[in-house]
Image (tube, rainbow, N blue to C red; front, side, top):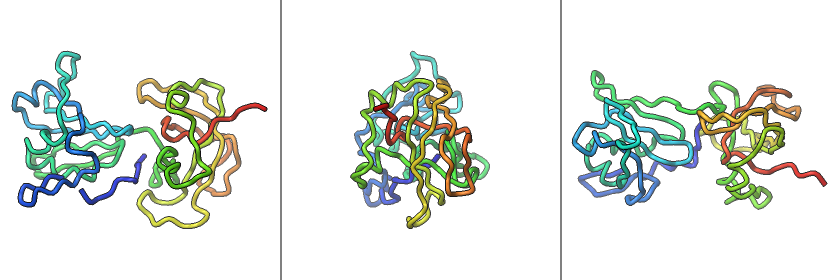
Length: 218
């Protein structure tokens, strides 16, 4: 699932000292001992919650090998990393040595327009622009239980398409499972959509950031 609030306006360009990443230069990110000791970064994750991870080919991830570094230090340590300023949330980039370039791939279980005909909006981000969307606090969204009903915003358009009327539907989803491996929820659509790309009972994986509302019995 792409969180397309990313703006393609900001990486370090050593010729102009321009910072092209949306995140601040001093943003904390995850890396490994191998990388800090000089091994080149070959895999980068931009987690759905916004975290960055930089890994070497060894992909060493034992607790003792995981380190915290400054995003600007990571980007300036390897020229090609500056190209990853537009890596979407929930995606990863792998270095193709033969092609001499980064290759992007989706790294999340959430719906995408290409595969499902819709994607889920980041409700927390939407709340900054729409007064009638007021997601529950993060503490509640991060601790939902099976059987709860949550409202998600489905957008039936490509992630980077211009916005227009009639693209979104706000629908209830009944939580049926907790996916601990992907740090997300799984649920069943509890409404009859107007758009044909989805239907009642469809299985939907979603993140806590997608939760726009929580059903509360009167």
